[in-house]
Length: 173
Image (cartoon, rainbow, N blue to C red):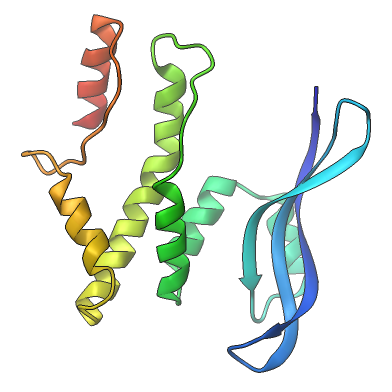
């Protein structure tokens, strides 16, 4: 059993190739104790170089962290298209395991977290594609090929209850 401690930002000095200077590189980490009681941590998100934030502002972000909203805002305000591209490609390999295999409520909760992130990735890719038609051409073509006749992305799954299918149809609309 793991007991989770708060998530926090860590930083270390790294060479920033964009500016040619050593700057703080930030990571969002989760700390916890494993079954043996050892203190452990894992990196949840490599945030990168954040210019202009004071240490107390980083602390305030850590205390008020809503990870889904944080990632959404990072994607929405990203200035480098590569960040959105990496995130989008990583999302293509996300697998959700429903430990209960019940009515699908767990899967809908996961979808409510991931869907806005997926949508903001697409929105940002479309914006950059309008500015530079060479950017995200393949990704946007694939997304358009996978849309259903009503313009929504396809969702795959196995139905085991009739009510689940109805609930899915309501959620998708």
